[in-house]
Image (cartoon, rainbow, N blue to C red; front, side, top):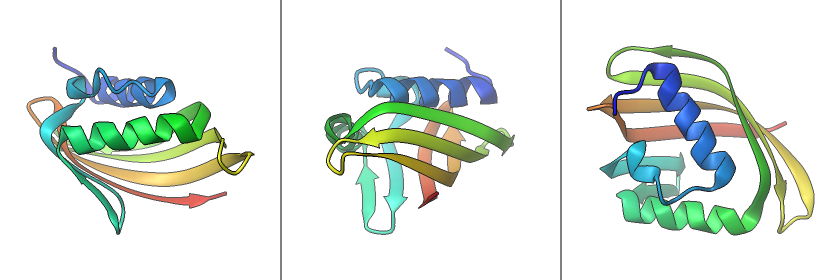
Length: 118
């Protein structure tokens, strides 16, 4: 299935908001390198699925919004905002962030993410 740049972003939004780990392979390559923080790097789809499954238990009512993005055939950079309820802390969380995606064959092969609480 071929995706446009906005289609990939919409798929990411849908998967995160629903905590859908069953369909991550639609978006991510099997050898994905997903860098969420300096010390949080997930190598491969199985590690990424485990991380997203952990988040399913920590986050509720996720809302992701891509404010803007720029892209080439091989890369997408997204300026984004997300909100969710942090179950562990019992409070709402709002984040502003930037994601850099490297692409191959219509899937994300690496993702680097930087964000701040707002």
